[in-house]
Image (cartoon, rainbow, N blue to C red):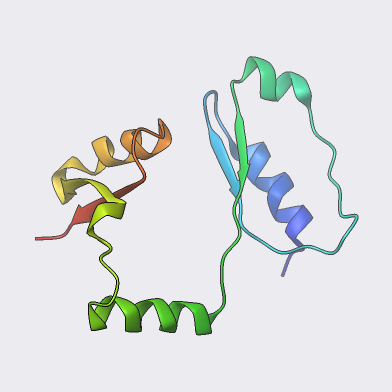
Amino acid sequence: AVSGAEAVEAGLGALRRGGALNVFAGVPEGTTIPLDLRQVHYGQIRITGSFGVGPYHVAQALRLLASGQVDFAPLVTATFLFEEAPDAIAYAMNQVGLKAVVLFE
């Protein structure tokens, strides 16, 4: 097992030019890592953070979706076939729309 900080450092070390790292892990307050700003600047590295929700929230969202009480269709701004997955990734990375869906049909 590794700490969140160790995992982030390893992820940064694995990035290539133009790469992106999303930090999706809770860490104790005050947790820091060394950051090579030259790597970020000249390597055009992007670092983002995101926060998830617990199982209760997922279950509640699934209930709402299944019940039809909430229309989630407007959230989907693009759909892609599985063969178009690279286009879907580019769409999401360029933050063109809100949510992209890849269809596995």
